[in-house]
Length: 426
Ligand code: CTP
Image 1 (cartoon, rainbow, N blue to C red):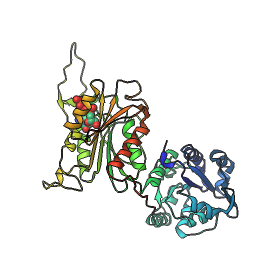
Image 2: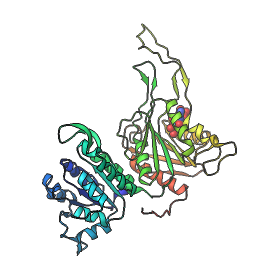
Image 3: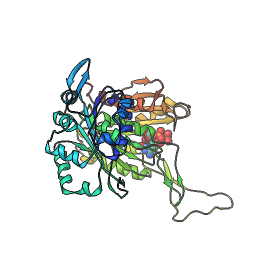
Image 4: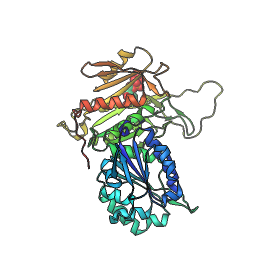
């Protein structure tokens, strides 16, 4: 679920291309997230997919004609004006070359373009067209014009096109559009202007070219945290070891494999990082030497010597100063404003978590009992206890990992003094 979309009004514009069928999934995804989706179709879009399909999915009127009136709270309104004024987000998917050109020229010769011209909020376009149309200087110029006005684009991707050719021009997948829509609508939220870096997944330490030491982490918690930070307007970076779940859209992804690579990626970003959340299961040891050829089995035992890896969170937590209060020792000593860790424990839960909070000099640690059936790796739920630097302890009820992530990010908002943040509209 994406609470950021709940109750939001989205105009989903559909222009005429075969990719229009994918927008049925998109409309359904938004509706399931409790958004109110008003679909506007061009006449050619209505030749690809019948308006009644969108009507059934969104359970709302679908408009194609400029001279239609709109039913709103029992009143008849002028369609395009009422829609444009009420919307929180305007998406056009697929956006054809023609529709993009009309928007860039400010034309208003059908309901979609006239509504777009009457609208002032965030807009997201998902172009879909043949490669030559996309790379044509006219289209490139139109995209540039719209980009300069603050319109966001997602895609197009490379892939098989309607013509049967393979190339750039394929519409972005509905799930990607959905994720980027969350980011666009969350922009200007309480974490606006702040950079949140999250580590996720389980690192892998090579034994030889085909084997590694790993762990059971799926990355679900880290991915949920990245989505929650993104939806609150943060500039979000996910430094992730291999994930068993899809990485989130609208987030900068930094893929790594080993603990050392994760350490280097986090350190490289540190001067810009405002909040670091360590949700990764980082290997504490790695083989002292990784064989360059596949190890052959021995008759009895194989002994692999291990050496320690860096503790990422500890290295960051123990820095002095932060971006807003730099330490005189120089920029390399900067510490993010908040450093948050997880303690995945099977025994002596509280003592272990408090030990890590202190040793790593964290602001907050989230304890979960990974031996519990509803709170460990690969499950969708988590039952956590929060310990804060000032001694505060909170036991949270069983929640989905998404809910835990949202609650942690709400705590970040509170700790940064942004609870009453006024969302600025572009
Ligand atoms: N962590 C880290 N770098 C490491 C090890 C852990 O950044 N090399 C982070 C994890 O992402 C987590 C927190 O530290 O947020 C605690 O991780 P955990 O594996 O529970 O604890 P360890 O520090 O490894 O301690 P121990 O092995 O004694 O439980």
